[in-house]
Length: 512
Image 1: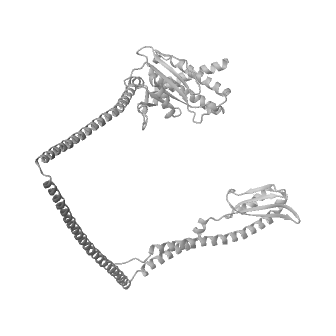
Image 2 (image 1 turned 30 degrees about the vertical axis):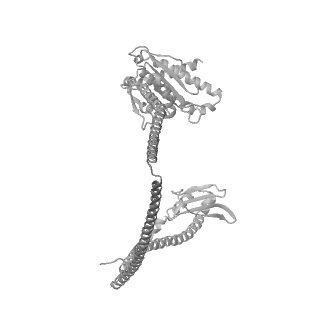
Image 3 (image 1 turned 45 degrees about the horizontal axis):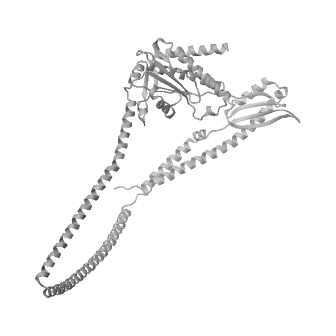
């Protein structure tokens, strides 16, 4: 069997770290050498450029300067040449990579003691990847060398047969020593246990013997006392024996027995009376709890019947509340709050008027005159006949106002004015309070909740789509639905009514 070298993986990690460090040192040293050589080359190029361009720079001949500078930008290391006059104005900027980073060498051009301009030459930085690409023979050679070292270590550092045999002997000796210690401890433990058992057995024998002796002694003394007592009684009876005394003793024993039986009967009677009283008290205590339990069952049954899906209705209440998470409406000044609420009221009234003009909602009328306050607004719609689709009218009115409020809200926000999003709830009039709790509890921004019986859901089923509430926690949440969308005909009808309401509002605003 061939064994691997010990800690061969750790040695591979060490070699990898060594390779990375050597590559890093190679890159750093090469970068320094190239930087020095490029700096010397750049200074020579700048000096040569100034000598060639001194006459053109003195005359500010831009064409000649451009021709001269272009010859130097053909060098691979040069990225940009900037020639300026004595007023520090740029005469010639040459270079196709002005945003590339690099070292810039600046030198002033003089003619005698006068400064005629300056030249700035930017040399391109050499990236680390270019250095590694330039030194690829060295990098690959170092990689192969480290791999060869790892293979040599894995071959030479393998344990020999002598070492394996020595390790096996040491392990066997260690196991035998451990087993010997365990056997010794086990024998000592067995000896201690046997000694303890013998001592306990002897103690039990002693205790048993002493108990038997004590019992025998007690029985003997009791027998002696019994004989003495019986002897005294017999002597007393013999002395006072007679016919009269015998009758008297018989009568006394009979009376004593009757007293005992009377006491026993009285005790039994008392126990029966106590048991009867306890049962009657328990029955009396249980009556109120049973009564309250029956009442609670009746209340639950009544609530379930009140929320049954087959309940009848002839009116629908549309409730609209503001989605005000931070109670901004309460903190708003009355001079701004009252006009905003008046605008919302006007929108709602116009929407109700325009919507009920639709032939689809013939026979539906408004009972109350809605108006907005801090808590929102409520519209009560009633069916004048059995064919009126009051449930559909409520759903359409709620969706219509949400569409209008969305436009008003976005416009106010665009003009940096106060506005709030809204949410709506549609339910039959009997469940209006429950719908208000649902709106404040689970209602979201620009959302409409629907809580209607089966007859109302049947009215809207051909026009809208609804979805149930996920993970309901109450019976009302289980019966409630969320408006998801409508068919094309209803959405188009609502869009026409929305446009008509906005046109009416614009005309009224222009007249005022």
